[in-house]
Image (cartoon, rainbow, N blue to C red; front, side, top):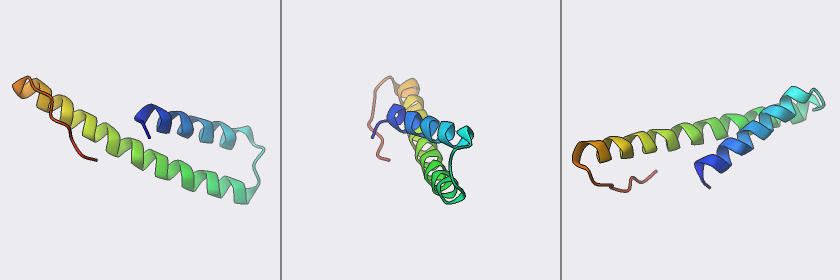
Length: 66
């Protein structure tokens, strides 16, 4: 899944949680899902940062594995 897709899913999860319409069990599940999405987005952003650093140092692009 792309970073943008994960971010959109995270934003949707936050909206659901902020709506106040979730039961406690649903809120806990949404929180757990959101936490996993935050971790995934953080890893993806770090990989992107490393890739950009690699480009800026030698002018080439080298794929980074997540």
